[in-house]
Image (tube, rainbow, N blue to C red; front, side):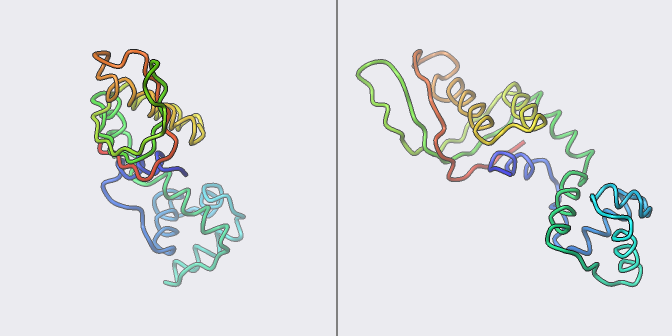
Length: 186
Protein backbone atom coordinates (compact mmCIF):
# COMPACT_ATOMS: atom_id res chain seq x y z
CA UNK A 1 0.00 0.00 0.00
CA UNK A 2 1.45 3.35 -1.03
CA UNK A 3 1.18 6.80 0.48
CA UNK A 4 -1.76 7.74 -1.73
CA UNK A 5 -3.78 4.63 -0.81
CA UNK A 6 -2.98 5.17 2.87
CA UNK A 7 -3.97 8.84 2.65
CA UNK A 8 -7.31 8.01 1.06
CA UNK A 9 -7.92 5.27 3.61
CA UNK A 10 -7.14 7.54 6.58
CA UNK A 11 -9.53 10.15 5.22
CA UNK A 12 -12.33 7.61 4.73
CA UNK A 13 -12.44 6.48 8.34
CA UNK A 14 -14.12 8.11 11.31
CA UNK A 15 -12.54 5.52 13.59
CA UNK A 16 -9.31 3.57 13.07
CA UNK A 17 -9.47 -0.17 12.52
CA UNK A 18 -9.02 -2.28 15.67
CA UNK A 19 -5.43 -2.54 16.86
CA UNK A 20 -5.51 -5.89 18.66
CA UNK A 21 -5.61 -9.12 16.70
CA UNK A 22 -8.35 -10.65 18.84
CA UNK A 23 -10.56 -7.59 18.28
CA UNK A 24 -9.99 -7.83 14.53
CA UNK A 25 -10.92 -11.51 14.49
CA UNK A 26 -13.97 -10.79 16.67
CA UNK A 27 -15.06 -8.11 14.16
CA UNK A 28 -14.69 -10.61 11.31
CA UNK A 29 -16.50 -13.30 13.26
CA UNK A 30 -19.46 -11.17 14.34
CA UNK A 31 -19.91 -8.56 11.60
CA UNK A 32 -18.50 -10.10 8.44
CA UNK A 33 -19.06 -13.86 8.88
CA UNK A 34 -22.19 -13.50 11.08
CA UNK A 35 -20.81 -16.22 13.37
CA UNK A 36 -20.52 -18.79 10.58
CA UNK A 37 -17.19 -20.65 10.37
CA UNK A 38 -17.48 -21.32 6.62
CA UNK A 39 -18.13 -17.62 5.95
CA UNK A 40 -15.17 -16.69 8.19
CA UNK A 41 -12.93 -19.13 6.33
CA UNK A 42 -14.00 -17.71 2.98
CA UNK A 43 -13.65 -14.07 4.06
CA UNK A 44 -10.20 -14.53 5.60
CA UNK A 45 -8.90 -16.98 2.99
CA UNK A 46 -8.20 -19.72 5.51
CA UNK A 47 -9.30 -23.32 6.02
CA UNK A 48 -12.59 -24.12 7.73
CA UNK A 49 -10.68 -25.96 10.47
CA UNK A 50 -8.61 -22.84 11.20
CA UNK A 51 -11.79 -20.77 11.32
CA UNK A 52 -13.25 -23.26 13.81
CA UNK A 53 -10.15 -22.91 16.04
CA UNK A 54 -10.41 -19.11 15.93
CA UNK A 55 -14.13 -19.21 16.77
CA UNK A 56 -13.52 -21.54 19.70
CA UNK A 57 -10.73 -19.27 21.01
CA UNK A 58 -13.04 -16.26 20.82
CA UNK A 59 -15.82 -18.10 22.68
CA UNK A 60 -13.35 -19.05 25.41
CA UNK A 61 -12.12 -15.45 25.67
CA UNK A 62 -8.66 -16.24 24.34
CA UNK A 63 -6.67 -14.71 21.52
CA UNK A 64 -6.67 -16.88 18.40
CA UNK A 65 -3.27 -18.36 17.57
CA UNK A 66 -2.21 -17.71 14.00
CA UNK A 67 0.73 -17.31 11.66
CA UNK A 68 2.06 -13.94 10.50
CA UNK A 69 0.59 -14.62 7.05
CA UNK A 70 -2.87 -15.11 8.56
CA UNK A 71 -2.45 -11.95 10.65
CA UNK A 72 -1.84 -10.02 7.41
CA UNK A 73 -4.90 -11.63 5.80
CA UNK A 74 -7.05 -10.65 8.78
CA UNK A 75 -5.76 -7.07 8.67
CA UNK A 76 -6.46 -6.77 4.93
CA UNK A 77 -10.01 -8.09 5.29
CA UNK A 78 -10.74 -5.83 8.26
CA UNK A 79 -9.41 -2.80 6.35
CA UNK A 80 -11.65 -3.68 3.41
CA UNK A 81 -14.79 -4.28 5.52
CA UNK A 82 -14.42 -1.59 8.20
CA UNK A 83 -17.10 1.15 8.14
CA UNK A 84 -18.53 0.49 4.65
CA UNK A 85 -21.32 3.08 4.86
CA UNK A 86 -18.95 5.82 6.01
CA UNK A 87 -16.50 4.95 3.23
CA UNK A 88 -19.22 5.10 0.57
CA UNK A 89 -20.49 8.46 1.86
CA UNK A 90 -17.00 9.97 2.04
CA UNK A 91 -16.13 8.73 -1.44
CA UNK A 92 -19.35 10.11 -2.91
CA UNK A 93 -18.69 13.50 -1.27
CA UNK A 94 -15.07 13.56 -2.48
CA UNK A 95 -16.08 12.75 -6.04
CA UNK A 96 -18.70 15.49 -5.94
CA UNK A 97 -16.96 18.26 -3.95
CA UNK A 98 -13.26 17.39 -4.22
CA UNK A 99 -10.73 17.10 -1.42
CA UNK A 100 -7.92 19.00 0.25
CA UNK A 101 -4.46 17.63 -0.55
CA UNK A 102 -1.48 18.27 1.71
CA UNK A 103 1.71 16.96 0.14
CA UNK A 104 5.44 17.35 0.53
CA UNK A 105 7.48 15.94 -2.29
CA UNK A 106 10.00 16.49 -5.03
CA UNK A 107 8.58 17.76 -8.31
CA UNK A 108 10.36 17.66 -11.67
CA UNK A 109 9.48 20.21 -14.34
CA UNK A 110 9.66 20.66 -18.08
CA UNK A 111 8.75 24.06 -19.41
CA UNK A 112 9.60 26.68 -21.99
CA UNK A 113 13.20 27.38 -22.92
CA UNK A 114 15.22 29.43 -20.50
CA UNK A 115 13.63 27.86 -17.41
CA UNK A 116 15.18 25.21 -15.20
CA UNK A 117 13.91 21.66 -15.04
CA UNK A 118 15.77 20.67 -11.88
CA UNK A 119 13.58 18.76 -9.42
CA UNK A 120 12.55 20.90 -6.47
CA UNK A 121 11.14 19.97 -3.09
CA UNK A 122 7.79 21.59 -2.34
CA UNK A 123 5.15 21.48 0.35
CA UNK A 124 1.74 22.11 -1.14
CA UNK A 125 -1.77 22.44 0.26
CA UNK A 126 -4.30 22.52 -2.56
CA UNK A 127 -8.04 22.01 -2.94
CA UNK A 128 -8.41 19.35 -5.63
CA UNK A 129 -11.66 19.03 -7.61
CA UNK A 130 -13.94 16.01 -7.70
CA UNK A 131 -12.69 14.81 -11.09
CA UNK A 132 -9.25 14.15 -9.60
CA UNK A 133 -10.89 12.20 -6.78
CA UNK A 134 -12.87 10.17 -9.33
CA UNK A 135 -9.67 9.34 -11.22
CA UNK A 136 -7.82 8.36 -8.02
CA UNK A 137 -10.64 6.13 -6.79
CA UNK A 138 -11.06 4.52 -10.22
CA UNK A 139 -7.32 3.85 -10.38
CA UNK A 140 -7.30 2.40 -6.86
CA UNK A 141 -10.28 0.17 -7.67
CA UNK A 142 -8.54 -1.04 -10.84
CA UNK A 143 -5.38 -1.93 -8.87
CA UNK A 144 -3.23 0.90 -10.24
CA UNK A 145 0.41 1.03 -9.27
CA UNK A 146 1.87 3.72 -7.07
CA UNK A 147 3.45 5.38 -10.15
CA UNK A 148 0.08 5.54 -11.91
CA UNK A 149 -1.56 7.13 -8.87
CA UNK A 150 1.32 9.60 -8.55
CA UNK A 151 0.82 10.57 -12.21
CA UNK A 152 -2.87 11.30 -11.56
CA UNK A 153 -1.93 13.52 -8.62
CA UNK A 154 0.81 15.23 -10.64
CA UNK A 155 -1.65 15.99 -13.46
CA UNK A 156 -4.15 17.38 -10.98
CA UNK A 157 -1.53 19.54 -9.27
CA UNK A 158 -0.21 20.73 -12.65
CA UNK A 159 -3.63 21.98 -13.70
CA UNK A 160 -4.93 23.35 -10.41
CA UNK A 161 -1.81 24.49 -8.53
CA UNK A 162 1.00 25.17 -10.98
CA UNK A 163 -1.08 26.36 -13.97
CA UNK A 164 -3.76 27.95 -11.75
CA UNK A 165 -6.58 26.46 -13.85
CA UNK A 166 -5.06 27.66 -17.15
CA UNK A 167 -4.20 31.22 -16.09
CA UNK A 168 -0.40 30.77 -16.25
CA UNK A 169 2.48 28.44 -17.23
CA UNK A 170 0.90 27.17 -20.46
CA UNK A 171 3.69 24.77 -21.51
CA UNK A 172 4.48 23.43 -18.05
CA UNK A 173 4.54 19.72 -17.34
CA UNK A 174 5.40 18.31 -13.93
CA UNK A 175 6.36 14.94 -12.57
CA UNK A 176 6.02 13.84 -8.97
CA UNK A 177 9.41 12.25 -8.28
CA UNK A 178 9.16 11.51 -4.59
CA UNK A 179 6.56 11.87 -1.83
CA UNK A 180 7.96 12.72 1.59
CA UNK A 181 4.49 12.75 3.17
CA UNK A 182 0.91 13.07 2.06
CA UNK A 183 -2.40 13.69 3.77
CA UNK A 184 -5.89 13.89 2.33
CA UNK A 185 -8.86 15.70 3.88
CA UNK A 186 -12.24 14.73 2.52
